[in-house]
Length: 168
Length: 172
Image 1: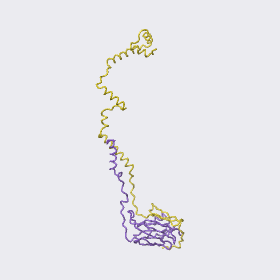
Image 2 (image 1 turned 90 degrees about the vertical axis):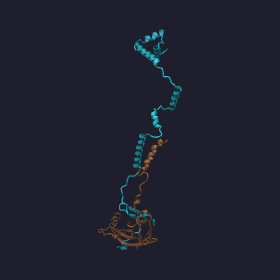
Image 3 (image 1 turned 120 degrees about the horizontal axis):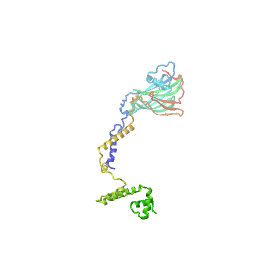
Image 4 (image 1 turned 120 degrees about the vertical axis):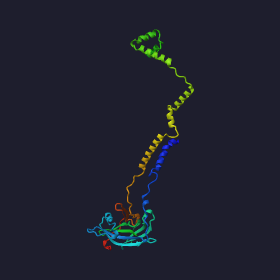
């Protein structure tokens, strides 16, 4: 095969190489995100929430005010009352217990998430207990402003929710 | 027995004689145009014999060799100008332009086909909560992660826990 027959192929390769978007993929959107700084003195807050439907619902507690509308849509209840809470600083080893009420307790082991997308968050190893009965173990990622909601047992006319949140 | 065509050819060439000529001419009485045809054929023959000589070949053997080679190759001879265009080492300018335009079209088609269209800008969410894994401690308990993208909310949905009377709660 002589050079004259290779010319169209060479031209095509040259054009493909200089065409934007073909030769190299676009940068991932995560590259634009700035890594949030992990603050010292972070705490883990847990709350036990009693969710019910009431004809005259009370205002949600301050800790849930930002999420009340979404909780109402997701769980279908219109009133959220705090039935207990506990807070624990995230110390060096990150292990400890959260006991938001006498009926529920959480074993927590926290370590900082080091990935670029972690946003200063933590990787939590959790174990939820109802009384002395272990219910579930879970690995969870949490960051400030991004609580995890656990739908617990039926209670009275509604349900119990357990909220876990990292507080700066 | 000669056929009519053979006798006609012999008659035109003047090779019929005697009784055979008389019988054939009697047969042609019904075709008056036959005499005209014979005159035309004889005129054409005279003309070819006078002017029909082929030009002498200076290199007859070389000419025959060329003919034999082209027959053997099975390709008709091409004009010299076309041979020069297709066999050149570099392309002519118009041909290069056409090749460039065709390459641009192919590159454009590949760009449209391979590069995804720009996605509408989605504001990155600040919400981060994720359940990586959940292991229920009892077969009667199920734990399911529910992420509601519309409300941007992560819920670990547990079924199978013991009912709890509301009187045990210390509501705040």
